[in-house]
Structure formats: C-alpha cells, structure tokens
Image: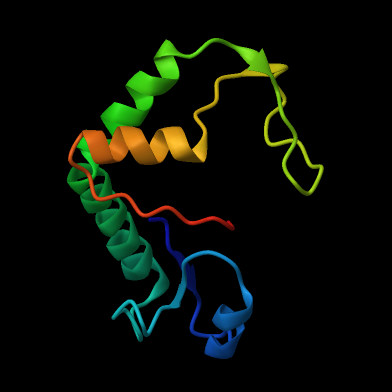
Length: 112
C-alpha cells in the first residue's frame, strides 16, 4: 500500500479527511528527522516495500502484459491520468484474484 507522509507542519487531523493511506511523519516514526534524512528514510522504506512486494508486482505486471490495448479511460473525476491514447487495464476483481491465486494477501476495497 502506498502511504502519503504528511510533513510535521501539517496538522495531523487533516489525515482523517484525506482519502487513501495518509500518515503523519510522527506516525511513521520519523518525527524530528530533518528533510534530507527524512527523504533518505522514506526512499529506503519505498525500496523495502518494493522488495517485499516484488512477487505481487510481478504477477500484476504479467497480467497487464497479457492484456490488449484499450482506449484510455478517464478517472471518475473526469481527469486524464496519462497523455497517451491507449492503455492496458486490470479490473479490481482481476487484480484481487491474481494476487490471491499467487499467494499474496489481497484485500478488496470497494471505494478508492
């Protein structure tokens, strides 16, 4: 799961009003860490998450490679997420099944 790290200067109560996985620097155990060291710590954690979740990343990447190209679908907001005209898609249910079938613990969230 992706986590958005809120800077110490942002009131932690804001996290409750933001969608997704938002945590304060304090909640991440990084309160008081200076910007350079904070970025290094967050980069290290990102690398750890990729390494830990590499099997799931591989399964989803293979599923996407096997899909056909389709016209780009806009986000629910109507915004475009890419400047390309075509993309490949895996549905939420397909991703859930691919991950569970590969032994990765998947949780289906209906509203993102």
